[in-house]
Image (cartoon, rainbow, N blue to C red; front, top):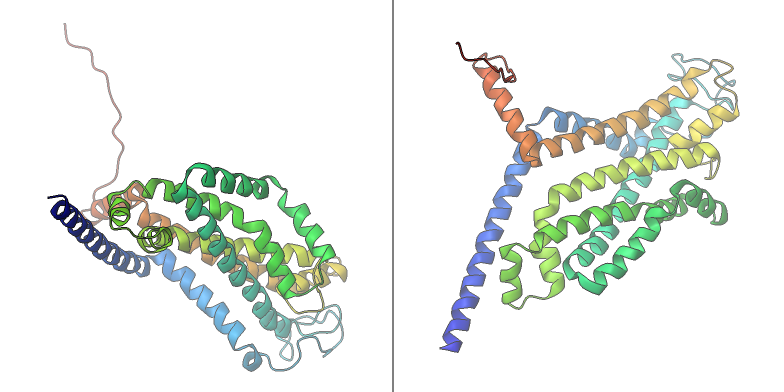
Length: 331
């Protein structure tokens, strides 16, 4: 009887796991369908694709060395130089195109690394619990309470300049927030039935964490990734602007550094700092639109409000909020 009961329990657990996986896959397909039908998401994806194509095809769009001297300093935009020249006589358009390679590479590399590190540490702490969770959480809190900007400056000052150094510094200072978010989500998911079914089936801890729990957090993982990309691009531009990077490498941050160093604002050479600043703002805006779109899709309250408003708009009904009115009974 005990053997039969164990076999039945194992079969029920396997059936529950299979049904849960099927529901996960269908929900993921529905998520991407809703994502690509959301105007905010489509707008953000289009902008990111344009910048990625510009970075990939930089040698074709702006051939030649972006740091070469082509004309007199601070020449305004013209037919020969579409975005003018810098304070050192370099073509702004060439530097903008080639700078997208460095800035986007740093942004997406740091976004990927911080998300992966935060994912492993946060999910491990959330699932194991107990002493392991306490130790990992304490380690995470150390990085959360350390001021990020001074740590960035100190590490950048003592390490050799270069793109790899920037990626390393930004990753070290940026993974803790993602870990805290993933830990919180894992704490709520580990009590679900499908996790209990996997434990009854004898699955190992890494399998349960990354195969059973992780697919239920994909929207959160993607949102965290794009949030980390914004952080990395802005932090990289800030470090370059302050001169804590190799400013001789063309990037959007180094363009801002040289514009400030050559007194572009005083000389009214707006074309040297507006284009890189606008590119940084557009990339940040595009990723923010993607995050907002994902929040509207995955947040039940926002999704229900949007569906209600679409129904009211379809039938030309003006949305109003009911106001309670107290009436006195007639004598």
